[in-house]
Image 1 (tube, helix red, strand yellow):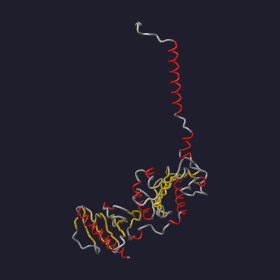
Image 2: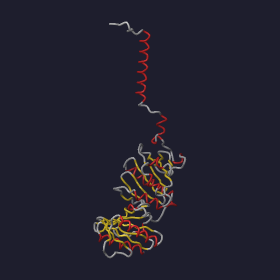
Image 3: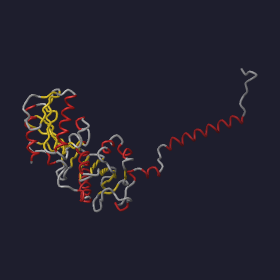
Image 4: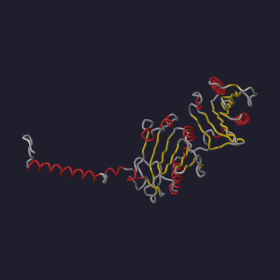
Length: 332
């Protein structure tokens, strides 16, 4: 029943309502369909759409020259300095920046027969071979295998890692395809050939360790705060396997005998401050401190300009054997 205050809508109002409803339906339909159509300009900016005919088509120059191979650039080269490295590898930049990082050049490459798959090359200029070896060794992946066709290189399922002079390289593929893995080797060799001036005969620190029972894949260079002690910098470490027991040894060139002796003493005293106790035995080498720290042993000594020792050994006898070997090697 109508009251005095109720009014039936007029024909004009009804028509306007219908028109507005129709417009809303059209707009909703347009939005629904539009979500399945990407602007061509957006597609053109995607890396997979930026395929170039050859390295010569790119400015600046490609990270790796692939002329004469089946590889073609798949994206333009990118360059990152110390202030912009976080844009590319946020979360890992501090390791590089604290190790002498200068710049990063990165670029993707693909095979003409492998559409949709690519390899991204990260070429870090670390300034010196020591800095490059440090970041290379500190990041060695689990289950890595050495690449015998390349010096100072190892592989994981879908990646290759290499140090070449002052450069540290990471080549990471979209998958573990055999062709991509083979192409990684080609890219790495091309880079080494084009940077022949950066090559070196031996990896930094390689001559510091005796070869018997050495696991060569474990050599590392710790540039700062080794073993949690801030005064231990530029420390080379390696692991040995003696009668099934794994031991970690360390060596650092402090330039003068006085500096090496002072650092050895300071490190020993610091461990004692934190609870280590001296072991009452004849030192296995001259100028050595033998300490027990909880359930492990430390042997610390200096020889000439070197500070060296055995770190966190679980067996004292094996630690003594290794300390003697290391001291004899450093005498040479």
